[in-house]
Length: 357
Image (cartoon, rainbow, N blue to C red; front, side, top):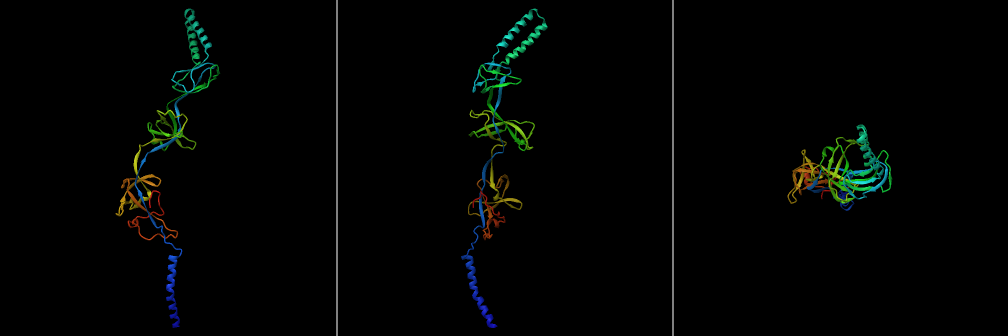
C-alpha cells in the first residue's frame, strides 16, 4: 500500500510540467487572442458655429398686382392698342369696341336736351339729362382701360372680332405689376409667436440656384385657419420689394423667416460630457505632456449629438472621453484609464463621429 501511494505521488509530480505546458500552449500557441479593443479614448475639439433662428416656409411667388381685364358690353372690336410684353401705366386705353351707334344716340339726346331747355318743362329736361348720363356710361363701357401699371402678359382679342359679355366680364387682356412680388405662406401655430411684420426673409428659388433673394414679412392676419389635418396655421404674406428681372411669377421657392440675427456659439459633442456630483464636467487636455484636468462646464441643448457650451471652455479647447469597447469574448483590456482614476465612468460602446481616437 505504501509503495502504491509513493508511485501515485511521483506520477502526479511528473504530470505537473505536462499540464503547465498544455496551458501555455492553449494560451499562447492556440486560438486564444487577448483583447485589443478595451477602453478606447477619443479627443474632441470645441468648435465655433454660426447659428440662426429661422422659421422655414415655402410657396410660389406672385405679382404684387394682377388684373384680368375685359369689356363690360358686347360688340365688335374696333381697335387694340397694346401687345404682349408692353409696359402700361394705370389709366391707359388698351382696346375699344365699335361705338358709332352709341355716339349717334348720344348726339340725338343732346339735341333733345337743348330743345327742352327752350320749350320743355323742367321735369322733362331733368329726365333727359339722366338718360344722357346713362348713355355716357354705356359709351365708356365700349373702351378698355387698365386700372394698374405693369406689363401686358396676355392679349386675347383682335380687330374685327365680336366679343360677348353676358352678366360677367369677358377677360381679354391681362396686366401684372411685378415692381414687387409677394407670396402667401403657411406658418404653423407653434411658430406664430416668433413671427413679426417687417422681419427679414431669405428666398431660395429652384429656378435660380445661384441667387439668394431678400424680402420681408409684409402681412399677418388676425385669424388662423384650420388645415384638413386639424392644424392651425396663419396665412401670412411675404414680399420681395425689388425683385430681379429674371424672377418670373409662378416660380416655386423655399424661404427662411429670420427670427434672430446670426450669432456664433461654441459647440461640443455630447459624448465628451460627464456627470459628476450632479454637475457637468469634461476632462480638459492642454495638448502637452501635462496630465488632463477636470473642468466644470455649463451647456444647453443644440442639436443631435451636440451641446452648446455656455461656460468653462473656449474655441479650440481639447477634451477627452472614453468608451468601453470589448472583444468578442467580452474580456476588457486590463489597466486603469486616466478617466477611471478621476472617478469618471467610461461611456459604453461609444465612439462618436466627432471624436478622434
